[in-house]
Length: 258
Image (cartoon, rainbow, N blue to C red):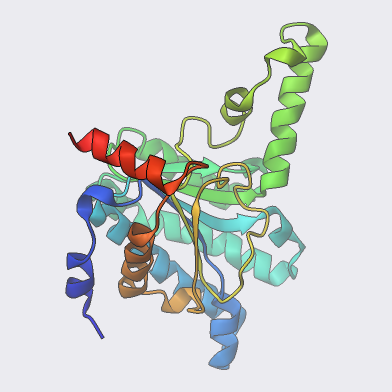
């Protein structure tokens, strides 16, 4: 089995994905396998967030988007929700000094006002404290779901139509994109889901129209930098055609290199 250094040597640093999105699945199952409470699985998952953030920054990835807490997660047992909210606030506060040292900028995506006051304050503080950072953009999806996001965008556009400032015929794909929480952020090149499930779970449905999807059975707390490197190596082996033929892609690539 290759070491991390050997795997990194296989990655073309000129073709790393600009934007990686992740569905961090498997914390609860990781804990259950070890006879631990689900909260301990979530705590261990925080360490993985630290690793993948640092590794993304080291590789020169510009955007990392993490599905930290979905709208549907509010339906989990209250004790688990309370634990997750505590961990989110605690983790962002603990990680802030290193995020600043690594020039990482925090963005918050989702219905953030639903987050309880204490962790929300810590999240806002971290966002504001890193606002001048110019390295990796770390997008945290909290109280987020794609259907919620698209619905909110539709409401904003419908409101403008109703007041007469927008014609329905003027609504195009860019306008919809500009009204999503990810406005100004390029669409993900690569979506990674851990934990063995092969579904999208209401995550970035608009944005991943042409993303490469990578599923792994590894549970999130066990997702190492070696696993992350494997995903990027796999990504770089794929041909991204965006509706074109292989010949067109090859000709475009050849022309751009002349």
